[in-house]
Length: 170
Image (cartoon, rainbow, N blue to C red; front, side):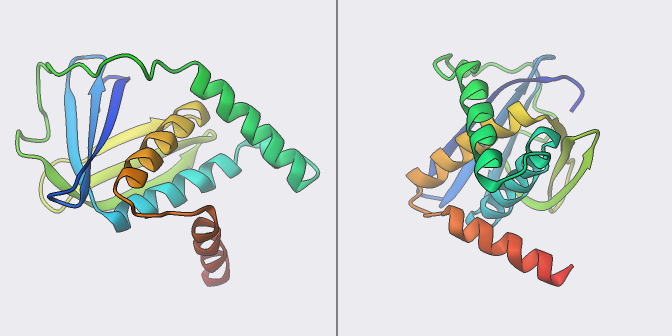
């Protein structure tokens, strides 16, 4: 993705049982892809791990202090977001095709405390986004809201369970 993120929208489609993720860039390009339940769960888990790796949070001495700081940062990020602004429907370009692709592969890594997230369909062009802690909070909020409408019932305990399994495997 060449420009910065201007807007994001996540909408559950009951007919397809998928979430449509739409991202508008500042250079008037729109990127769209479908996300399955499993893919959404993996994204939430990666976003959670990234939030927990925040250097400000990591240095806190107690779990309570870490949670308090995370909550404070989440409230601040959400307060600075224009959730009430209507999603702009007119994009100048659809680089990933006009037909929405299903997200198939998820690549990620952390660089300078930012999460580099790559979403790729089975065939075709991928999208790569650099996500700071504030954008992470917004993505998580949008994805959880869409998953709730889908009645996919992702819980914190499930996300923690996957994190623990990953620690044991690695």
